[in-house]
Length: 247
Image 1 (cartoon, helix red, strand yellow):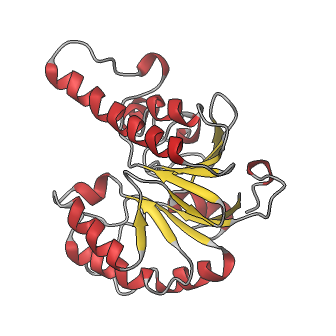
Image 2 (cartoon, rainbow, N blue to C red):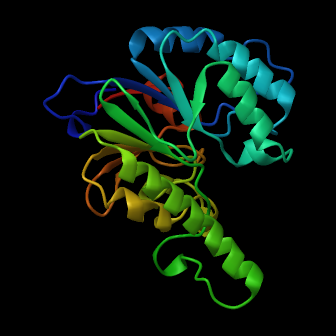
């Protein structure tokens, strides 16, 4: 899939993106062929969270073996499912040892394109956005997404290239959630994640997952393209679980 509006005049970088792999312990090399295929189709592979189904080490190890079949750099973020067992650090360690760069605190540059990413968090959009008011637990909830937004901004600020991709699990806009029940939009992302993205002109595309029944494409208020690359969105639209963007 050629995203011509997320490109510049420079040599384009092909980015294969997919979210919501949900690897289970019963799986046998579930994505090995796909990673080999993406290595031919793209220059970089980006994974947008929910890489495992329950955040188990066994699930991460199965995915790690498949990642080793990839012949191009692999970057990405964790999703909420990767936290379920309370050991996201272990999941990160296993995937990192397989060659994946897990984004969270530091951005990375590949062939002149920066990649910055965080898991993100929920919180809602517009009038439905949760405010930091009232009980301490509500304020802590809002502070979590604000922390994620700050981490993303800090990474974007360090990028010195004129092209970058923001990688998330939760959505920064409501537009790519269309198709999901509207009452659950607040659980699928937060507009606070959009604010740092729109501060930097070098962000040419945003990719996220999480919304299995959402919409493929939307835009931030400043017009930056946002792509929902949950495999459950991509497969019916494009006949395969990943998409290739040119940045």
